[in-house]
Length: 195
Image: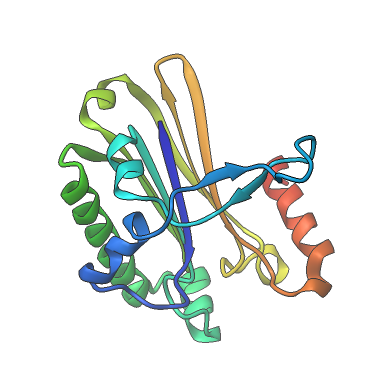
């Protein structure tokens, strides 16, 4: 069972006591059918996972967006000058907090992969018994910000083989607002095609 969690943090780092809400304080995701017409498409009620979801998971994937404020200076320094002081502190803070939270829920989670680009972070965790069956772990990033160079928009990837199955997770952050749908679709296509 795989549990995938994504969250736009808006430049915040959560306290450990608040972080548990990311994994355990909502209603379970459940499909429901309209009672009026059983032939209608299913509606999915999306909410936060429960402790039970996390306890039953063999793999947990966490994708975060905006782990640092996407100010011009943060974006440029992280994308071009390799000055990662604030970013490194935030990445490490999130990694530690999420790892501790997962281990509190199910003690035998191990990190399989972790990658970041400017404000994006992706962590993949698996239960210890699966770790020997995981191979060919790779991580990468793809910037789609200004001029296709800056990493304030784009994606980070983690892929690996679990026995004989190849699995890839992508965490992305695209341009906001309705008027930018075409740009988001273009970025999505470029990322999937690695253009």
